[in-house]
Length: 211
Image (cartoon, rainbow, N blue to C red; front, top):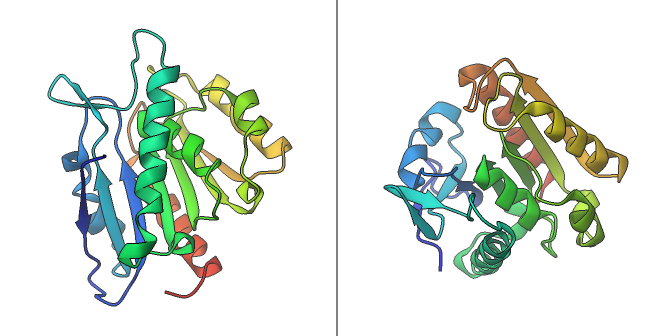
């Protein structure tokens, strides 16, 4: 089970939800700023911790050895978490996934295999583990998903060019993917990038079932 915490929307009647997946060595606490900075009063946030301890934070998969077993396990755990949200009042079409770095990988790899359409998928400063395998295993609704991927041109940890090529392969496969680049390192580029994320969320939830 993944440890998580629900931050309620200011609009108490809203059932729209953003599931937030942090990066390597971080935790859910690293994203408590997000509701205030995005300023979307109708959006609930589910902050999630990765399953493995990592130097005071958490990790979604092993970065030193074979990442595949950890990625597969984290995908299963996130899938189970998503499965448990509709009984709590959050329908899949009203749920978006946000992931940074490792969280980006887990969010995209899980969301594009998930059998039910979500409101949207946001991946920041991350990549796909295996594009060919993912394209073979896309869910029947994957091409209906709205996807936003963003990356920094000065990212020293995950160079942009291979990720840019991955995004193009996904688009060529018919996925509804928006790609945005920023002059930033391995981080979120302040209000400039938040504005893009905010606009994407507003459009995604407008396109989904009314809250």
